[in-house]
Image (tube, rainbow, N blue to C red; front, top):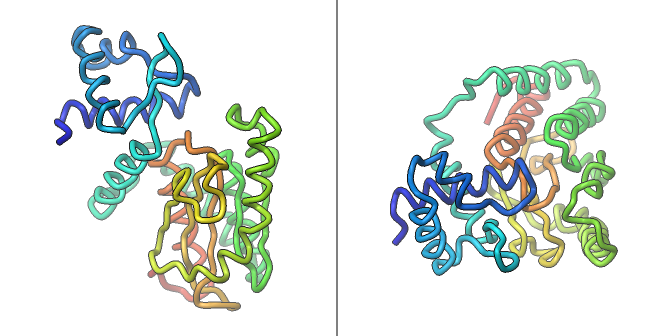
Length: 243
């Protein structure tokens, strides 16, 4: 059973690792939580024992595991119903997304605008289904991430992308927002990627999808908000209503 302090420490590790792309040490967290480094290390050991974090090599800090990310993402999903974006960056980002969607005109251009805006805002690869085709943008963002500096990892990601379009058409995702983390990806378990997809009704299908693909290390709270909002904006732009 995870304690409240352990939950907060896990959240901090996820968020710090997303920002700095290097293992998070006890000294940094000790300052944030106003406790000793020894106390943080004790909690880290327990979180590691529970499978939520790992130490990539001796004397390093900790990074989240897929299980740790899943716990974090589930917590965000539970908060969504009661949370509205409130920070200035969030308001600017969602306003920019709404503006670009409204400027699209024809449905295909509208979807492309939404994808391109997600690429700019999340720094991930953006994607959407347009009829029977998959539109993708921002490939350089994806392969520019430090996780994908070796050729073997790049090949894994390329294989995932090759199979993404048929999988989206066959998957029939039921949730307004679906998040597949790392090994949860049914078509790229070893690619080290997370796929975040929102469903929307389009003129081509009642199950059209827009989302992003990026490394497992990312700012899930912000990205999930933007992908969900992208689906809502497209729904409103095409049908005058939100789901």
